[in-house]
Length: 626
Picture 1 (cartoon, rainbow, N blue to C red):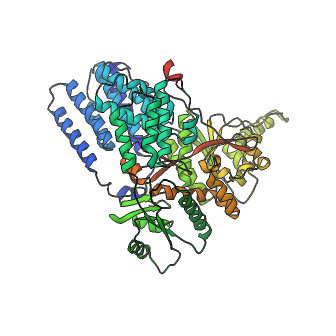
Picture 2: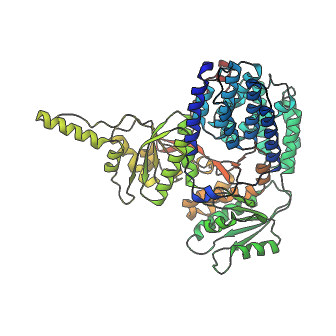
Picture 3: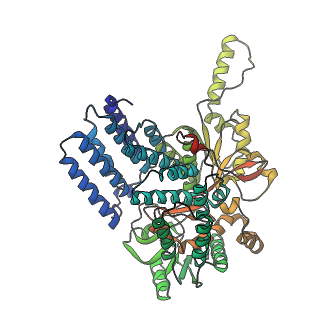
């Protein structure tokens, strides 16, 4: 990009950023909700950003002002003050004749904003235009590439870039920050993916082995020091910074709580009693198998199905009984009310999500198996694979509409475009009409008939489906999907990739029934796709009648373990917990964000696989890293 195109660049940038502000659509609660209380760290960073802005305003030259404002933008991003960071870009729109250095710096901070907003498409476009001039910009440029790879799930590329960058970073604080980014990428890998990685680079091999050691330590903290000593013996010259390693160990140990008294709130009577019983069985199974705690917790169960007892009464009763933590409730209405509280006396891990995503209540953490999370995960993979034009085929139901809305909003926010969407009735197995409408086959048939009428004779023409679709997002249960997938093929759409959620898989191995699902790409729980743990045998032997609720059993297992890992997730930006329901992190509003594994059907069997993702342009050394 030439220097004189700065105004054009900014004009297009502001259009793009404004467009992003429109998606996803926020509910009235979200719009009017107060902002999340500012932490001490955020306040310090904001104060530093304002100091840099003051320096910019006192600057005598455009170059100096640009330098300070770009630094302020970076600090605002660290403080999660993205809107304030964006505001600083407006000061550059009237600048003329920028130097190549100034333009590159502006593009760098603009890409940082796009990455902070998780807009991978926009970030990729901006990064591809950057031509760094100085050594500092070169480092920032490769940091951006690493952050982009991390955002789209190319963890090994991100690790390789960061390991290479460590050779050029001199500042101790910057080196420690780079190590944390490496650790974030390692932590983001599901255990099966981490164990599958191979490399011929000793430094990366050491990092991978360290990640495996620390992940095992989550299961037995008491053996952490011994296992780390063994690791250090295997990698005596590994360049990992001692400061980072000591901090990592301290965080694991300090955030591991002592004795617990857990109160579990579940509706043991009524319509949801079967759901509650399965969650309870999973939780208790995790408790009996638990070897992480020096002292086993006390667990008491409280029945929430009694309408005469409010949550507040049960909560106070649990505290009076000595509870240090609460797991539950499930009821969305109750959880909605909890998000309006300023603070809870003891931590609560709810087993569902509130309707308002902006949770401001101290000591409230939200965990669930929301289908919308899977729909958004599908959108992220599709965009990462550069499939920017989608069709959506979804059930005409409340559930189907939720998935359609979640996928569409997130997909279009990330830079994709839903070109067509069509619902289908749930009380039939005949999907021909809605599929023909989805693929514009009816219009093609009309054109054929017009031609036949014009020439006064029949033709051998085949209806021609629309050709502008990169992918289909299918919101369907396994019953419907078994009929819909063959119907796609019959209607000339067999070559279009179909993506879906865990709902297309019953969780039961049945090659004959599932053969029609061959080729569909979907996300599902590690518990379902890698179900070979001792707890899986416990479940199948003791509760075979609950087979249809197998995912809820895994949900109960993870709810138990999250009690022991929630502090670690909250106190460390790089932290993840890899559980039976997915790889989990805590967002800024104390909601558990869960990433499932990817799978496809081959010969009627659900098979885990690692999707091919399109990374930023890489040098040859990085391409060979994994």
